[in-house]
Image (cartoon, rainbow, N blue to C red):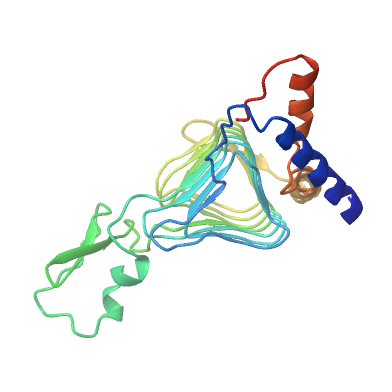
Amino acid sequence: MSLKEVVARGMREAGAALKHANGMEIFTRHRPKMTFLNNVPFETNDTFIAPTASVIGNVTNWDESSVWYNAVVRADSGFPITIGFLSNVQEGAVVTTIPCAKSAANSDPLKHGNISASSSHSNAVGEGVVLGGGEVGRVLDTGFPPVTHVGHYVSVGAGSVLVSCRIDDFVDVGDKCTILEGAWVESHVILEPGSVVPPYTRIPSGGRWGGNPIKFIEELGDGAKDGIKKKAEGRGIMAKEHAVEFLPVGSTYLHLEDLEREGKTAIQG
């Protein structure tokens, strides 16, 4: 869309707003991106975050990644979430981390040179790390911080839930899958819709998996592996098309014009 078309749309919308200046105005307070505890979500210029999505806290969106309508990417527990290049979090999916007290950096006792002999480090059941008598963080049973990592060319299906897990590159997560804390899905994997990956489960590279709990189905051929990348690229193209439509000036004027033709008082919402 050219600059002339953008300016024309903006002027038209402004004119419609002036026509209805005497009516009650209700505006949405939804924020697709929200700072949490001074952690600002990072996105590149070609990242698409849908207007009804929620990206909160310490989240990094790589180039051409996308977060779709009603999806939630919530990094408010002190640990980061990463969405890789050309990866997508589809409609209604939730990507988050398990709760903790403070950041992952503070949960590593090796980074504290003045730890006394009385300090302890317990993570047998994912409990908080105790340093000098105070809990400052939470780690997984593996001892690693509970970050959520979504690699490159990953499709997270609609309604799926990811919690403090690692998804490597070229993975297709089907709709309504659940991947719990400590799980690791290696590259070139397809998870069938509705699959459940229990905590601390490793899914090896190159296979199709499904079920609750998840089980191996078959090895992936070259065509299926190529399909994972093509699916992510297709979502990337679609994201660009949606990003063009949702410009800062919006399209509210169309709704206002419809209300005007129907003889109704305009209430923006």
